Amino acid sequence: MHIHHLQEKNSIANRFIAQLRDTSIQQDRMRFRRNIERIGEVLSFELSKELNYHSKSVTTPLGTAQINLPQEDIVICSILRAGLPLHNGILNYFDEAENSFISAYRHHPDNDEKFEILVEYLASPSLEGKTLILADPMLATGRSFVNVLKALESMGRPEQIHMVSVIGAKEGVEYVSENFPENTHLWIATIDEKLNERGYIVPGLGDAGDLCFGTKKQH
Ligand code: URA
Image 1 (cartoon, rainbow, N blue to C red):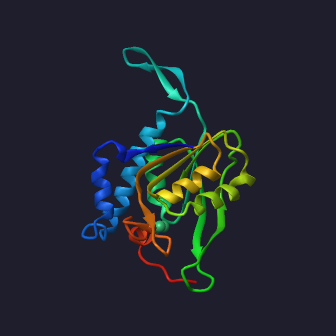
Image 2: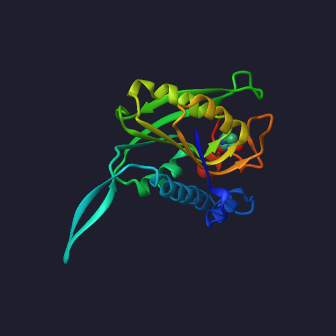
Image 3: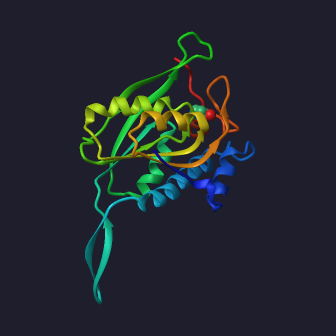
């Protein structure tokens, strides 16, 4: 897998990441969602450099300009619910993309720390021969990404897969590296050291879904 780690080089995206993590700022839900969206935009710009382009002529009021434009059919698939602001950020740049939504959540069958990832809802166009961008802001254990990839098998085989994420844990990055096709790209803003016993990224930022949309009742 090709890993593109945004924070290896300092950029203004560091400020977005800092605000996402900071307990005195992250409670502002609109800012939290917007910062995830902004990181989605930055990562999309980086990702766009890996796409295939073809030359096209564009008529201007004064003549004709040749310009290289992306030629791939892109499908953005986000994992509900925390993936929504990231999805928006990616869609802001790849505005002609098709869209796919899938749910994945942590189910604690014994009400303890052990959990399984359940995938229940999927709405997607065909992925056959397309470029699939999978969006999930938190790459913790990596099991959501891998379960989602399995669930998407029935939609056809994408030509190329790009994963987009905001914060990852080292072990989650390792897990997806082992379970995704070798030519997959991972575009990630920052990678943290570890997971805690509940599978949360440390230092991380807390629960991304709750910070975006408020807490939810367990069922
Ligand atoms: N999901 C989150 O929202 N936060 C984590 O730290 C891990 C998974």
